[in-house]
Structure formats: structure tokens, C-alpha cells
Amino acid sequence: MLISEIETKHILTHSKVPGLGYSINPYVGCQHACVYCYARFMKRFTNHEEPWGQFVDVKTNSLDVFDKDILKVKSGEGAFIASVTDAYQPVERKYKLTRSILERIADLPPDLFRNGFAVSILTKSDLVLRDLDILKRLEKISVGFSIAMTNETVCRLFEPRCSPIRQRIAALKTLRDAGIRTYAFINPILPGITDLPAIFAALEGVVEYVCGETLNMRCGNLTDVLHAVSLFNEDLRPSFDLNIRSRNYWKSVEREFYELSQKHSIPVNNFFHHIDSEHSY
Ligand code: SF4
Image (cartoon, rainbow, N blue to C red; front, side, top):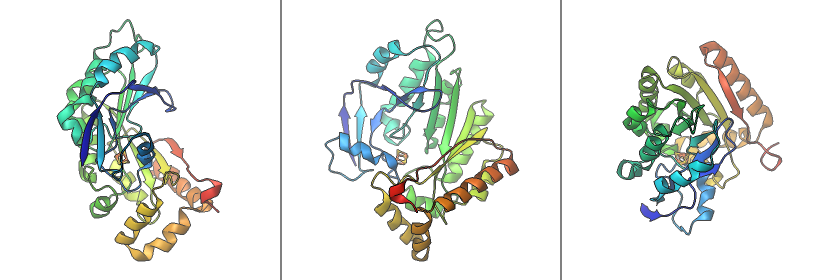
């Protein structure tokens, strides 16, 4: 694992996440090394030769840059942490960049952000619990965990270095019990692998809402994904390959998603499709 220290020009970058306006990514690259990771396109903007998951660039000047960037943010806006990395990957234990930025947000003068500065965190690591003391100080905070499966053995194949699923669910419960708004991002949905009924059942009582997302194949991840599917179950590969390209299949998945949402009384906030003419029939 190559860990390098770099300087960044901006830490608050414009984002299309509804209701937020900005993203904060304290790191480039991600030690979690999920085989399906769509953020691998970020490698293009680095000089790295290593495979995705084998390098992290640490934006060591994040705090100084934050202090400048925040002056341009209008009242009522907020930030998504993080859009192209996991802000709670292992390297955060040492550098504490995410923690320091959250502290800065908690300390923002109320006259600058009269309506509060909204923060939405999405992670696959229960390291986020380390920062519960600061999260509790934030006026508008939600914390979500990405969950694509419930089987821990399969999880190790697709998400080799993330917190086990049971720890993510336990972390959601801890956060919710502490009064933090919680959500789950069920993504990416993997045909024949993602067990939606089991996930919804596990989320009952620990999240306020869910989002769903189909597999995003537009980032060069397909070879790795199909390889992991074969390792899991070679016999599944033909139907997996067929279903990920089928509009009808994804429509039926979305229908099931909303039915389960009703059954478990967990509202759906959004369901994202990534199917396009190049990858579908
Ligand atoms: S945790 Fe997120 S950013 Fe990190 S490798 Fe997995 S999908 Fe990519």
C-alpha cells in the first residue's frame, strides 16, 4: 500500500448531491479496495501505476484549505463526505483529517451559517464512531453506511477491507441511539448476490431511510466484478452477466425495493439507475 502526502487547492468541491452543494474528499484513492468501486476513475487524475485500492494520497493541507473554501459557501449549503473515497478508511486513524474537518464545521460561527451547515457522511467503516462526540455537536448531520450484501464471506470477496456488515449495522444502531439521523445506501445491487429482503430486515429500526443504486459499469470495473462473481459461484456468472444489462431486470429490482420499503416501513429517498444503451438490452 503506497501512502503519499500531497497538497490540494480545494477541499470543498461542487457536488450534485441533492441539498448539499459540496463534497469533501480528504483522500485520493481508497484502501477499502472494493472490486466494483466506481471511484477508480480518479486514478486518471493521479500519477499512480498501482491498482485501485493500493494507493492513497493524503491531502495534508485539508484544514488550511477548508478555512479558505468555507468563506465562499453560502448559508444553507452543506457537504457530502465523501464522494470518491471513504473518509473513514484505515489511514484516517493516523491522519484524522475527517475528524479535524468535522471539528471545524462544528465550530463554524452561527452568524455565518444561520441555517446550519448540513453534513451527510457515507462510509463502510465503523471508525466513524470514533467521532461520535463531534457528530453530536453538528446541527444538521446524517450518517449512512453502504450495504450491498449480508453474507460476510461474500463481503470479503467484493469489499475486502471494509468493516464487516454486522459491524456496520451495529454502528448504525449506535448512531441512531445517540440521536444521529442514519440511512443506508444499498449499493451496488448485485444480481443473485444482493439479498434485498435480508438487508431490509437487518435495517429495520436502525435507519431513517434508504437509497438504492444499480451497478455502475461505466468506470472499468466490470472485469474485476465478474472475476469476484466467478470466485463466489462460477455458475452464477452467465445470469449475472445477463441481468446487469437487462432493463427489465432492473425494473423488477426497483419494484421489489419499493415493496420492501413499504413492508419494513423504511422510506426510499432515492433509487439510482446506471443503465445506458451501451451496456443494456
Ligand atoms: S469504500 Fe467506497 S470509495 Fe472506497 S473502494 Fe469501496 S466503493 Fe470505493
